Image (cartoon, rainbow over all chains, first blue to last red):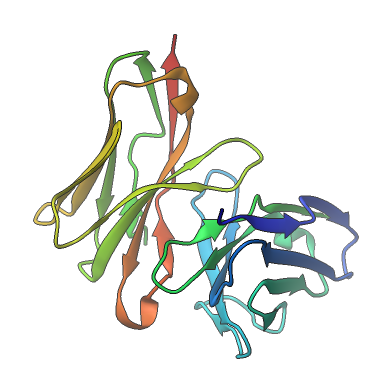
Length: 114
Length: 114
Protein backbone atom coordinates (compact mmCIF):
# COMPACT_ATOMS: atom_id res chain seq x y z
CA UNK A 1 0.00 0.00 0.00
CA UNK A 2 0.81 3.72 0.17
CA UNK A 3 1.74 4.15 -3.48
CA UNK A 4 2.39 7.61 -4.88
CA UNK A 5 2.51 8.02 -8.62
CA UNK A 6 4.31 11.00 -10.13
CA UNK A 7 4.14 11.85 -13.81
CA UNK A 8 6.05 12.50 -15.98
CA UNK A 9 9.29 10.94 -14.78
CA UNK A 10 11.29 13.22 -17.01
CA UNK A 11 10.54 16.15 -19.27
CA UNK A 12 12.51 18.44 -21.55
CA UNK A 13 10.99 21.77 -22.43
CA UNK A 14 12.02 24.98 -24.10
CA UNK A 15 12.70 28.14 -22.17
CA UNK A 16 9.54 30.20 -21.67
CA UNK A 17 7.11 27.29 -21.77
CA UNK A 18 5.17 25.83 -18.84
CA UNK A 19 5.35 22.30 -17.52
CA UNK A 20 2.82 20.48 -15.36
CA UNK A 21 3.80 17.67 -13.00
CA UNK A 22 1.16 15.43 -11.44
CA UNK A 23 1.30 13.64 -8.13
CA UNK A 24 -1.33 11.03 -7.27
CA UNK A 25 -1.87 8.93 -4.18
CA UNK A 26 -3.18 5.67 -5.61
CA UNK A 27 -4.44 3.77 -2.57
CA UNK A 28 -4.94 6.34 0.13
CA UNK A 29 -6.30 9.81 0.63
CA UNK A 30 -3.59 12.39 1.07
CA UNK A 31 -4.69 15.17 3.37
CA UNK A 32 -1.41 16.94 2.69
CA UNK A 33 1.01 16.89 -0.20
CA UNK A 34 4.50 18.33 -0.24
CA UNK A 35 6.66 19.37 -3.16
CA UNK A 36 10.45 19.15 -2.94
CA UNK A 37 13.26 20.07 -5.27
CA UNK A 38 16.74 18.61 -5.41
CA UNK A 39 19.68 20.20 -7.15
CA UNK A 40 22.71 18.03 -8.01
CA UNK A 41 24.68 16.92 -4.97
CA UNK A 42 22.31 18.71 -2.64
CA UNK A 43 19.58 17.52 -0.33
CA UNK A 44 15.86 17.58 -0.99
CA UNK A 45 14.52 21.05 -0.27
CA UNK A 46 10.89 21.65 0.60
CA UNK A 47 9.23 24.05 -1.80
CA UNK A 48 5.62 24.09 -0.69
CA UNK A 49 2.90 22.36 1.28
CA UNK A 50 -0.61 21.91 -0.03
CA UNK A 51 -3.79 20.79 1.69
CA UNK A 52 -6.78 19.65 -0.31
CA UNK A 53 -9.07 22.51 -1.19
CA UNK A 54 -6.88 25.29 0.16
CA UNK A 55 -4.04 27.44 -1.10
CA UNK A 56 -0.53 26.10 -0.96
CA UNK A 57 1.96 27.41 1.57
CA UNK A 58 5.33 28.23 0.05
CA UNK A 59 8.70 28.13 1.74
CA UNK A 60 10.81 31.24 1.90
CA UNK A 61 12.49 32.04 -1.39
CA UNK A 62 10.08 30.00 -3.54
CA UNK A 63 8.14 32.09 -6.05
CA UNK A 64 4.47 31.18 -5.80
CA UNK A 65 3.67 32.75 -9.17
CA UNK A 66 6.31 30.64 -10.84
CA UNK A 67 5.51 27.36 -9.15
CA UNK A 68 1.74 26.98 -9.21
CA UNK A 69 0.36 24.26 -6.99
CA UNK A 70 -3.14 22.91 -7.17
CA UNK A 71 -4.51 20.29 -4.78
CA UNK A 72 -7.98 19.78 -6.16
CA UNK A 73 -8.73 16.42 -4.57
CA UNK A 74 -7.49 14.13 -1.82
CA UNK A 75 -5.60 12.06 -4.36
CA UNK A 76 -4.17 14.61 -6.80
CA UNK A 77 -1.83 17.56 -6.60
CA UNK A 78 -0.17 19.31 -9.52
CA UNK A 79 2.88 21.52 -9.76
CA UNK A 80 3.12 23.80 -12.77
CA UNK A 81 6.43 25.45 -13.53
CA UNK A 82 5.45 28.56 -15.46
CA UNK A 83 7.69 30.30 -17.96
CA UNK A 84 10.46 27.83 -17.25
CA UNK A 85 14.07 28.89 -17.53
CA UNK A 86 17.27 26.82 -17.55
CA UNK A 87 17.86 27.58 -13.86
CA UNK A 88 14.59 25.77 -13.10
CA UNK A 89 16.15 22.54 -14.35
CA UNK A 90 16.09 20.24 -11.36
CA UNK A 91 14.62 17.11 -9.85
CA UNK A 92 11.12 17.69 -8.48
CA UNK A 93 9.53 15.17 -6.15
CA UNK A 94 6.24 15.05 -4.32
CA UNK A 95 5.28 13.46 -1.04
CA UNK A 96 1.75 12.55 0.00
CA UNK A 97 0.68 12.06 3.56
CA UNK A 98 -2.36 10.86 5.45
CA UNK A 99 -2.92 12.44 8.84
CA UNK A 100 -0.90 10.61 11.47
CA UNK A 101 1.35 8.74 9.06
CA UNK A 102 4.70 9.37 7.41
CA UNK A 103 4.93 10.83 3.95
CA UNK A 104 5.29 8.59 0.92
CA UNK A 105 7.22 9.82 -2.07
CA UNK A 106 6.68 9.64 -5.77
CA UNK A 107 9.57 8.68 -8.04
CA UNK A 108 10.28 12.26 -8.98
CA UNK A 109 10.42 14.25 -12.20
CA UNK A 110 13.64 15.28 -13.89
CA UNK A 111 13.02 18.64 -15.57
CA UNK A 112 15.46 19.97 -18.15
CA UNK A 113 14.84 23.40 -19.62
CA UNK A 114 16.74 24.18 -22.80
CA UNK B 1 22.27 26.98 6.67
CA UNK B 2 22.18 23.20 6.69
CA UNK B 3 20.01 22.20 9.65
CA UNK B 4 20.44 18.47 9.04
CA UNK B 5 23.86 17.18 8.09
CA UNK B 6 25.12 13.83 6.98
CA UNK B 7 28.86 14.35 6.97
CA UNK B 8 29.78 11.08 5.31
CA UNK B 9 28.96 11.16 1.59
CA UNK B 10 29.63 7.45 1.29
CA UNK B 11 30.15 4.28 3.31
CA UNK B 12 31.43 0.91 2.20
CA UNK B 13 30.75 -2.20 4.26
CA UNK B 14 31.27 -5.93 3.89
CA UNK B 15 28.19 -8.15 3.75
CA UNK B 16 27.23 -9.42 7.19
CA UNK B 17 28.93 -6.58 9.05
CA UNK B 18 27.29 -3.59 10.69
CA UNK B 19 26.58 -0.38 8.77
CA UNK B 20 26.41 2.79 10.83
CA UNK B 21 25.08 5.93 9.20
CA UNK B 22 25.27 9.20 11.09
CA UNK B 23 23.26 12.38 11.09
CA UNK B 24 23.58 15.65 13.03
CA UNK B 25 21.05 18.43 13.40
CA UNK B 26 21.12 21.95 14.73
CA UNK B 27 17.46 22.93 15.16
CA UNK B 28 16.30 22.13 18.70
CA UNK B 29 12.66 22.36 17.53
CA UNK B 30 12.98 19.10 15.64
CA UNK B 31 11.07 16.41 17.50
CA UNK B 32 10.68 13.61 15.00
CA UNK B 33 13.36 11.99 12.90
CA UNK B 34 13.15 9.66 9.94
CA UNK B 35 15.41 7.63 7.73
CA UNK B 36 14.63 7.08 4.08
CA UNK B 37 16.30 4.80 1.58
CA UNK B 38 16.54 5.73 -2.07
CA UNK B 39 17.40 3.62 -5.08
CA UNK B 40 18.33 5.24 -8.42
CA UNK B 41 15.35 6.52 -10.42
CA UNK B 42 12.99 5.95 -7.49
CA UNK B 43 11.63 8.14 -4.77
CA UNK B 44 12.78 7.82 -1.16
CA UNK B 45 11.19 4.94 0.76
CA UNK B 46 10.47 5.29 4.45
CA UNK B 47 12.66 3.02 6.59
CA UNK B 48 12.36 3.85 10.27
CA UNK B 49 11.64 6.80 12.52
CA UNK B 50 12.09 7.93 16.09
CA UNK B 51 10.35 10.44 18.28
CA UNK B 52 12.36 12.79 20.48
CA UNK B 53 10.86 11.18 23.58
CA UNK B 54 12.76 8.00 22.79
CA UNK B 55 16.44 7.24 22.41
CA UNK B 56 16.15 4.02 20.45
CA UNK B 57 13.80 2.41 17.99
CA UNK B 58 14.28 -0.99 16.43
CA UNK B 59 12.70 -2.66 13.42
CA UNK B 60 14.25 -5.92 12.34
CA UNK B 61 17.78 -5.32 11.12
CA UNK B 62 17.40 -1.55 11.46
CA UNK B 63 17.90 0.40 14.68
CA UNK B 64 17.89 4.16 15.06
CA UNK B 65 19.55 5.82 18.04
CA UNK B 66 18.89 9.38 19.11
CA UNK B 67 21.16 11.45 21.35
CA UNK B 68 19.26 14.67 21.96
CA UNK B 69 21.95 16.36 24.01
CA UNK B 70 24.42 15.89 21.16
CA UNK B 71 21.78 16.51 18.49
CA UNK B 72 22.90 13.34 16.81
CA UNK B 73 21.19 10.28 15.45
CA UNK B 74 22.47 7.16 13.82
CA UNK B 75 21.07 4.27 11.83
CA UNK B 76 22.50 0.82 12.44
CA UNK B 77 21.95 -1.97 9.93
CA UNK B 78 22.87 -5.43 11.19
CA UNK B 79 23.67 -7.60 9.36
CA UNK B 80 24.24 -5.59 6.20
CA UNK B 81 23.13 -7.14 2.91
CA UNK B 82 24.03 -6.25 -0.69
CA UNK B 83 20.41 -5.23 -1.24
CA UNK B 84 20.88 -2.50 1.34
CA UNK B 85 23.13 -0.65 -1.10
CA UNK B 86 21.36 2.66 -1.70
CA UNK B 87 21.39 6.31 -0.71
CA UNK B 88 20.19 6.88 2.85
CA UNK B 89 18.65 10.19 3.84
CA UNK B 90 18.16 11.43 7.34
CA UNK B 91 15.20 13.78 7.78
CA UNK B 92 13.83 15.82 10.66
CA UNK B 93 10.45 17.33 11.43
CA UNK B 94 9.33 19.98 13.89
CA UNK B 95 5.83 19.85 15.32
CA UNK B 96 3.13 22.49 15.32
CA UNK B 97 2.72 24.41 12.09
CA UNK B 98 5.70 22.55 10.63
CA UNK B 99 3.96 19.19 10.96
CA UNK B 100 4.84 16.99 8.03
CA UNK B 101 7.49 19.32 6.63
CA UNK B 102 10.78 17.46 6.39
CA UNK B 103 14.29 18.87 6.40
CA UNK B 104 16.68 16.45 4.75
CA UNK B 105 20.36 15.76 5.03
CA UNK B 106 22.48 15.42 1.92
CA UNK B 107 22.40 11.66 1.94
CA UNK B 108 24.98 8.90 2.40
CA UNK B 109 25.68 6.36 -0.31
CA UNK B 110 25.93 2.93 1.28
CA UNK B 111 27.64 0.14 -0.63
CA UNK B 112 27.52 -3.37 0.80
CA UNK B 113 30.02 -5.70 -0.81
CA UNK B 114 29.28 -9.44 -1.08
